[in-house]
Image (tube, rainbow, N blue to C red; front, side):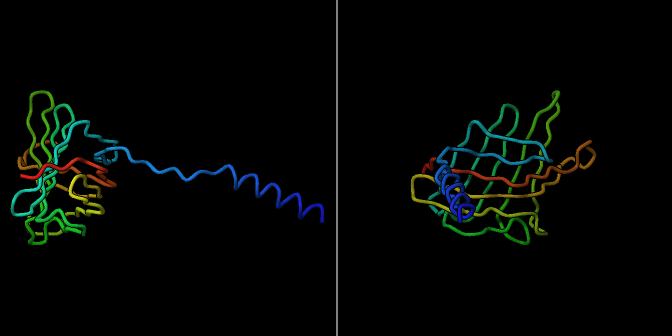
Amino acid sequence: MKKIASFLLVLLVFNSCSENVKFNDVAFQALKNTAFWKAPQYTVTVAKNGSLTIEGINANELLTLETTSANKGNYVIGNGAVIQATYYIIENGVENNFATGISEDKGFVKITKYDGATISGEFEFKAINEDLGADQLYVDFKKGYFNNLPVTKL
């Protein structure tokens, strides 16, 4: 009986020590070709027609996500849709433009929260370099998310 009481006491102590932590940090980040990428600057606009544009800037890089709406939902990039993602970078004086096409499925943008003032969600995509002779032909963004980004309505 002592062992059971001791076990329950230990269980209670460890259970009491846990905290439910909720992060409300503003963020726009992802894994870019398996390396951590974060945009310290960002803008989010909703046009009069309801379309959404999210831009993240990191020094010499620009990532843009475009959807037809800011409403909650999953938006497929490519596959004949007008949903798209682009990535622009200047390295060593060389400009590289990467873009998703509309011919095949290349990823998604998932909006999980939009309250009219801020927006949150997830994204993943693979984009092709517009210069097919470049050293890097693709850029791959995985596990991307944006959290509590302020929204400007046009």
